[in-house]
Image 1 (cartoon, rainbow, N blue to C red):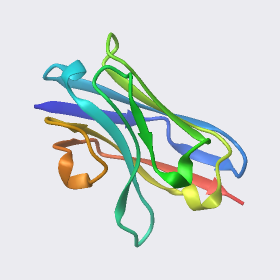
Image 2 (cartoon, rainbow, N blue to C red; image 1 turned 180 degrees about the vertical axis):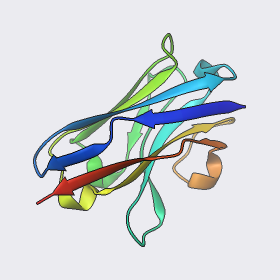
Image 3 (cartoon, one colour; image 1 turned 180 degrees about the horizontal axis):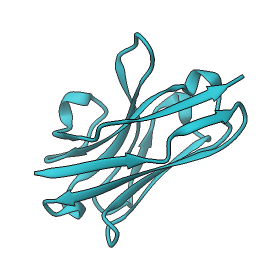
Length: 123
């Protein structure tokens, strides 16, 4: 079992920045690929960014490329999402997720989820 707790959400103006953190506990954190997903009002949960177990490989959804950066610190059992140049359409609940096997962009490929943190971007 892996327990995930997100933090860092809040309200920010368009063009601003926000950093999210996801603290993990339980089974060995460094063996899991990690990802951030988001779910806007009346929308499906979608992949935002992912990082390999080592941190050496990352993936991004097209709509955040060049603006968001995912990283991890295995010594601190934490994964991060730095969000810059935020837009109102980035408003969503952001979820941290861990995969027991492999790595992907579908929600059903991830086994453990945090409770989510709200990010609201005002225009």
